[in-house]
Amino acid sequence: MTTRAAHRAQVRNPSPDEVPVAGRRRTAKPNVTPRPSKLRIAAFLAIAAIVVGGGVYVASNVFMGQRDKTNVSGAITMGISMDGFNPNVLHAKAGQTLTLDWWNEDAPMHLTGGVHSLVSDTLKVHLELPAQSRKTVQLTAPMAPGDYDFWCDSCCGGKDNPKMHATLHVEA
Ligand SMILES: [Cu+2]
Image (cartoon, rainbow, N blue to C red; front, side, top):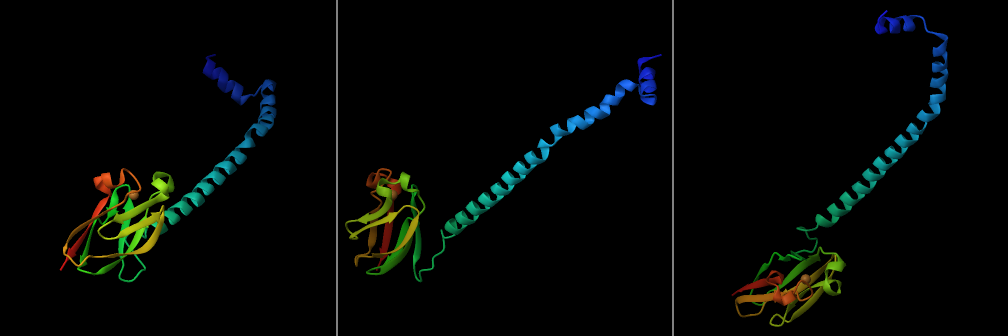
């Protein structure tokens, strides 16, 4: 008899030795039971990830969605970050007062004193904007047309950093 034939013979006529197999199957069950709880943990983690991820997504959308919108009528939205002012050129008529909806996207730990600022001696402004917040501020253009520099002096080298400068372009 070949081994294969012997195997077939064994299958056809199970020997008494194979009876414990059924018993073993039953005793093996307890090893299987941990599976559902692992699945439950995985399901819980998946749901938790969806809930937390969804919350972060919604929250970031609410904040980021404000980037280019403003509820302040007639206001110009202006962001500030480590990359500077955005936009970094503002246009005004001589003597015009601009209303800016100014917002700061950076976390406090990145900012000196927890703020970005908007500073100019010529424009007579020294404004501060706390991290991750927004504020309506006003900037009045001088009567003399020209390009007026303003800057942030609270981070990343401040006035010495060309990136932290912006221009108020005043036309007659
Ligand atoms: Cu700054």
